[in-house]
Length: 410
Image (tube, rainbow, N blue to C red; front, side):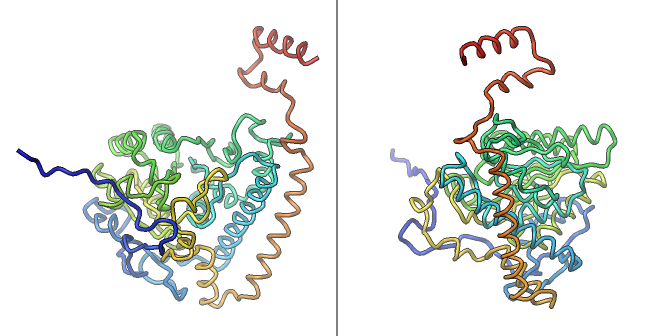
């Protein structure tokens, strides 16, 4: 007897040489989503897992119950943070092409994901980023030179040459060390949040991962522990449409939203326009208030787009249309915030152009200073440092190895 069996293999809507097609995206008008109280039951949030929370419309207006009504000074800060992040990204990317940096990963097109969330959280909250969350550091007022020096692996490298470029950490800023294997961040964040609750501290944890890595076991382990123990944690899925070269449908986004995985674990799932600074800020603030009030975790899906390659080792023209970024219906987060500020009367095209030039000049000068501390090809770190920080104090066997290495070195 013949069985009518078939195997479904998800396919991207468009390949190189074809017109971009985002008809698969489930969108909603700005201001349409209701805003339940942070104390709402799971049932009251179900629709938000499949809809799309948006505040800024195509004309730049802020609409609906999710508008956080940020003061102009905060909006100007957000715009500056995003512009600094993009300018730094571009400067280091070009340095990688020139051989000064071995590897780099841009966050172009995803700046609001990091900047708005960081601004909505408290300084004591612990952040567990991925390699595309540079904006978290910038929005917590870290000097870009620290990030540049890490990418250059020079004498001011926070990691002392022991990590790949972009794998930053910042203990003083409460930003955890980055792991290149995504989804590891989520159970780590849940564990940190559980410890914070046990110690009766007021701080929560917030973690990010890509939509592709939701297929990893770590994602499901994190949601299970977060749900069972009501950990005060926010788990963010950055749905930028592409993993390394794999369309989001391969991770399960074809049949249902990633936010919809939350309710299955008893966790509210909120799907938000990741290129809308106001929407990301408002949703993060809502989830933080819920966590601090004892309501437990929230899963947030941020719908955005990876404008650049996955990394400097990637060529996206091999697997997606060249113009896809320009066709993305949710636009550019920087342009959208600029338009909102202009609409509100708090900005102008001339002021924006002047700010872009000012930041570009600042980043260029900062890069010159970072390079003055050394580059990997021209002035690598002293290899003797490999024996430091293995243990609190060097053990006798490490001392012997160090002496042997010094003899070999000459």
